[in-house]
Length: 357
Image 1 (cartoon, rainbow, N blue to C red):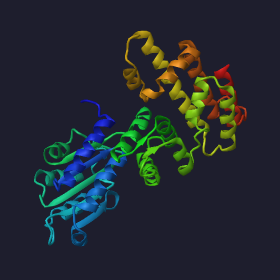
Image 2: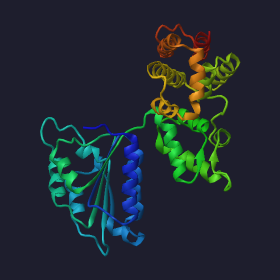
Image 3: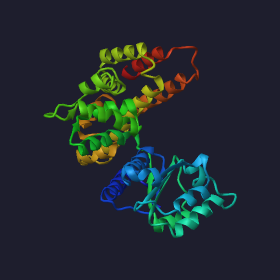
Image 4: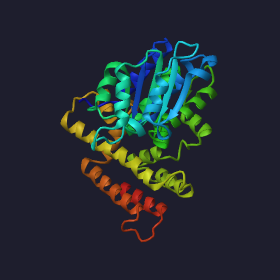
């Protein structure tokens, strides 16, 4: 079975939302997987828009898998709506009922859902939200859902996909973000899409009407991420062997340890040097590869390729491997291995010195 890509998940989510906006409803929705953002987005839209406000009191029910059972859910789903075309039954935490381990025998819950899904009530919109887990595709329930339901399986974004996701999200809202700002935000927040969207939506409101482009200045002023003192800029300082800039950032991190934990700092630098290693491999194996293709393989905006090209001249492939070994060593030290009480700040200063020199 082909691996699910995060880009495909976003496309499928948009298709489902498009149908919902056009009042095209299906009797069952199975929303499952590692990324809760899309699950919340679709279930939230159904909750807010499938019924008029006057219809919700008698025709909308929100249940929780840990507090109910399959028979109660199906009993509710099998009722006809009252003075409305549809009724909505949303089951949050449904993984507690249908996405549990069934290796020791067939679950009664799966049987109950399976019987209902053979002939679901067309006037009911049943939404099953399974966050963090997926329904076993070998079960009869899943095979029935494939015939009758809308299924969305979500996956977490990889670190190198976050900046592009941020750019695409703002583009859909009629705005943009410069590559440096997207990278800073991605490095600081990580793959928490709900938090990213929350921050971007706040920024979007604050942007002037005549210039809807997010910059590092906007991020520093409104989100509190320094445009000069962050892990992304530390990586750039190491790439260029800018000793002064690197030490300034390390000193800033030492004064603000809660906002700049050592483990995340090393993870960010490691990501950049692993991409540099990959850059060397691409150039060694295919000298004629196009820049846009290299950027795609590295998972970076083409804007940053010149930085990797410059860094490859300062760090040959052997030196890059040595740096990666150093990063692994200091990652272990930051976690207490072979560390005689040295602070994270001193460890980071030592690491930066060894990388540059």
